[in-house]
Amino acid sequence: MLDAGADGVVVPDAVALRDAVVAATEAVWADRLARSLAESRAQGRAAGVDCAVERCVALTFDDGPDAETGRLLEVLAEKHATATFFVVGRNVAARPQVARAVVEGGHLVANHTWDHPRLTTLDDAAVRDQLERTQSAVRDATGTAPTFLRPPYGDVDDRVRSLATRAGLRVELWDLDTQDWRTRDAEETRRRVAAQVRPGSVVLLHDIHGSTVDAVAGIVDDLRREGYRLVTVDLLAP
Image 1 (cartoon, rainbow, N blue to C red):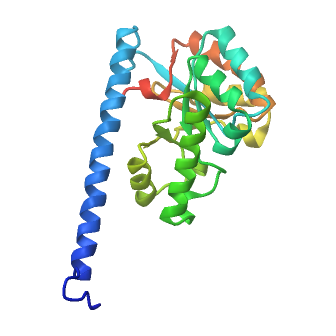
Image 2: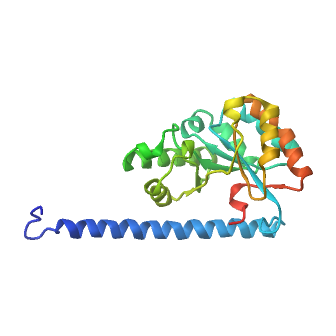
Image 3: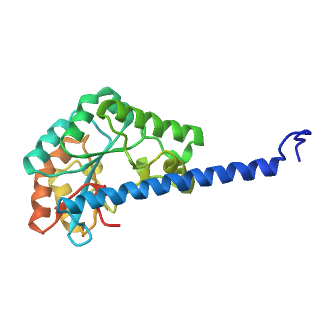
């Protein structure tokens, strides 16, 4: 055991104290996030949206803001549809006006890290930097900080989840992967959504691809025809 000195703290005690502080901090933030989510859902119900009883679906767009994001916002506005945008921090810093337009359009902005690394390969300090830099960029551009995180590639473990919670972020993945980044085919993207969607689905799309934006109007029409309501991820039923 290391010599802590006459007035020092024994190393095992220091480790236990650190772990207790981390656990307490995580618990506080988890409670705040849960209350924030409950408030969002209560506001949704007050506005007539209750995903506990309705067939809700969340369209989510990763990796922007990009040159195609403005066109996507126009499509969503024409369709009176809302979506969730998981933004990359460096792209927000490069296009703050587009990030601001996302929020002004009634959509939800969420954190997708600063430059899209695999978070589980980074140490704690680097993960925090990825999250906090993006939080700051979004706050500067829009006046609000995200409360949701989508780790790039869905690459997450308990350590990353804990770091995200302590940064004030709730991890949100997806259950319907359109593979739009692979096919780059609007009709195929639309077909995959129609074939795989179910109540409560979180649909993974990417607003950096023109073919995806081309598919969105048809996707919205298809979902509404089947009785689905389009919402942001914070309104989905638990």
